[in-house]
Image (cartoon, rainbow, N blue to C red; front, side, top):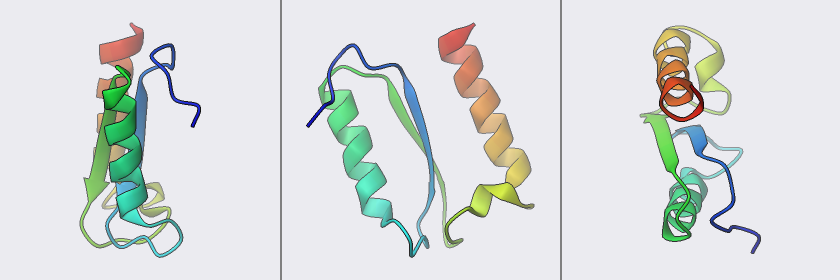
Length: 75
């Protein structure tokens, strides 16, 4: 309801096995952001659950994706 083109670029990290927040919600949110002209990316992994990026083997690649996103949009 509140998405508009003035929103900042967004990076969502979400795993397909998340039982807390359905993965499809992030897919839809990124789609809505892009439709409004907002730069949006979804970094995901197959299988792990909620908070998956906090621990290895996921932490290092997720951190790389975050650094690349920051470099791309905020440098």
